[in-house]
Every structure is written in structure tokens, then in C-alpha cells.
Length: 194
Image 1 (cartoon, rainbow, N blue to C red):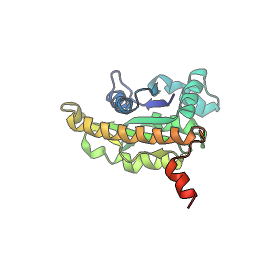
Image 2: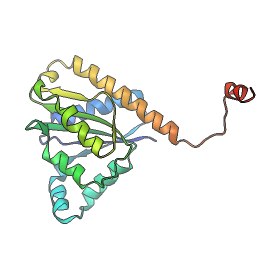
Image 3: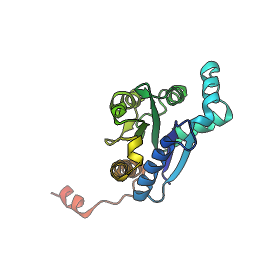
Image 4: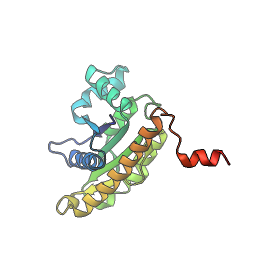
């Protein structure tokens, strides 16, 4: 079964960041209904992340979160925008991961903020972070401003598109990882005989 880790760095409850993460997970699940989704709320791990940065040793709860992210087939990562970039808690969590932990992992990125003017965080902060970690973000990323929640039609459309791209990427990864059944299409056999 395909597993998706959802990392959300919202600080409040309820959090628009968590709402966006759930929307992206639901959009993916609408295409891949058998996917298993495991949500990690970083606000619950804030002290553990800080202690790990100071000592180099993760708590059992943080170790579980790290293992969830590193063993997942794909990652949905959503952060609130603070001072024109991702939150410190979001960055700190990814700082405690092994540098090679996300190599080649499909990632769907999202961010939330008060106004539309922060939407460039997706391309100028999040994409470079995941490029450095050698993860592979899908083409469509989703930003949700406060105004998007009042009439979410456009937000739903963007989330749906991103979810389809992410699901397609996960399906391609699963197909590539599947053992070879030995089946050779008839057309391929014909070409081999030419």
C-alpha cells in the first residue's frame, strides 16, 4: 500500500495550514483511494525538535515522525508563512532529517498566509529547500491566503490539480518499483522479431 506522510507546521488549533494539508491529502486520495495517510503535526513536536537540534538525539516521538517521513512513498509538506518564508519550526524539522532521507521522494508542497503577496514562498523558499534535500516536488504547489477560505472554489481547483499530479507521480513510482512479472506486450514481441 502506498503511504503518504503529511507534515504540517501550523501553530494554532484549528490551523489553516492543517486544513490545507488535509485538502491536499483528500485531493490525492480522490485519485488513489487505497493510499495510507499519516499526519505529523509539528506543533506537537516543537520541544523535541529543539532538543534534537541541541543534543543530536531524537525523542521517541520525534524518531517516530522522522521514520514516518523517511519510509513514506511520498510527502505532503505545508507551512505557514512567517517573515516571507517557511516557519522556523518547519525548517528545523527538515534540518534534523538525514541529508539523504528525501532523495528522489515525491513531494507536494503548500503554504498558508494572510495575503496573496506571500505566495512566492512556494518558488523562492520551499522549492529550493526540497531541491537541496534532493526531493522531487510536483509541478503544482498550492498557496492559500486567508481570503481563499471564504470562497474556496479556486483553492479546491488548485488542490485538485496538485493532488492529481502527486497521485500520478506516486503511481509511477509504485509501477517502477513493482517486480517484473515477465509479461511482454505482443507489440514488443513483434518488434523484437523484425
